Length: 339
Image (cartoon, rainbow, N blue to C red; front, side, top):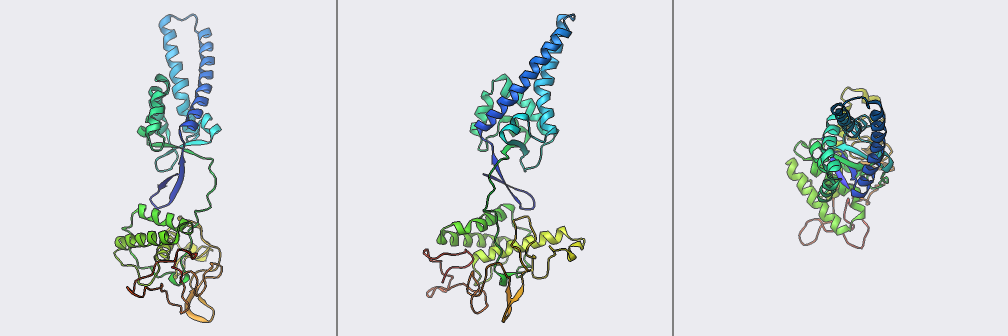
């Protein structure tokens, strides 16, 4: 899996096409192109029999360039990276940033393909694809493109869980401008897969990511907040800012996805992943004023990092006073170590 990150830190999970599928697509394209080329050549030979030898050679060269070179370029440009062979196999040519290709990309790929596919019978293309980590041939390298698979199973691990309710809106003043896209992607990957990790490994990863995030923001992580909950709360704050920026014209105030003072309204789809349907974060827990609560999210006092006293705190080690590591034999959501 190749994950590309856009400027908005949106991870595009793309699967680069490997050599067997690409070779099959190229063979199908060549079979179609050669069939058309032979048919056009026969028709031209019959129609230009009265011309001299030089004219016939010029017509042959023009036919070769138009059919075997210009044809694939035109097809890829008009179909945004899907030739007939790629459609049959389920592949598509995209830019390095995941966007659709344009004429210049198809032109470079087609021009280089004449040398590495037609003139060398595909030997150069095969060697380049085997050497490349993402299976790219020379035409893809020069054009800045990538051939990816379109028919991939839908992943169920892309859900970014919301933070505990008592952290909603707590990081509204945090400066996130210095956080690189790579760190956002690493945090998102951890949050979507933390329940699949060993508790001790997950706790160590969350601590390291929280430390890196605190170094980038210039503000230390709050004492007593579990690192996974801190990461989820900061990601939610970034989502809220993206939504506020997208709806800066004020039209979102009356829409179901409006952003309140406590943070992102639950139920609004965002760039970093779906949210859980339900009321907005920040509602008080019944019978416990001051403690936010989100019905349907799955958090309750004493569960998921919400202590019974209503204050965000993690279990402390008796000797050092630092947060204790989670027990390996107790299930954990990743937001707080088990008691």
